Image (cartoon, rainbow, N blue to C red; front, top):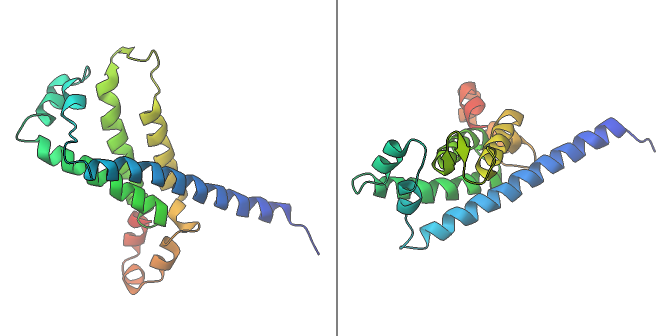
Amino acid sequence: MSFDLPALLDRSDKKLLAAMRIALGWLFFYAGITKVLNPAWSAKGYLASSKTFSGFYSWLASDAVLPVVDFMNEWGLTLLGVSLIVGAFVRLSSLLGALMMVLYWFPVLDFPKVEHGYLVDDHVIYALVLLYFAAAKAGRHYGLEERCAKLPICAKYPWLRAWLG
């Protein structure tokens, strides 16, 4: 019986990456599905209280745009969570999720001051972890993306696999 430490560590890294992906996926799924199931939920208060780029966020909170923003928030978070949990389309969903986290981050800033006294908050951490998932191709480790790679469409269009996972 041989003991291969590098191989053992490599398997552990992949398991840890998958565990992180699933845990963060659950967080996003829960945040989204609770909004989907609550008909009274709206992003209006959050957007209207923006201190940085207040004109842009006020426009997002306007009656004409708010239904689209609410829909994208609810379902964006929910589908990002599903994507991370099952490990499919992780690269694409992680990049879009990181963009969403940056858009969530600006309203709490009163640049150059920060509401909580620090520049890096949970939105920045989530964005960085999502970018890591995209770079590490996290869906290929204990996720559905390995199976998706074997589909005929991915063989025919290799660029599709590069974007999706």
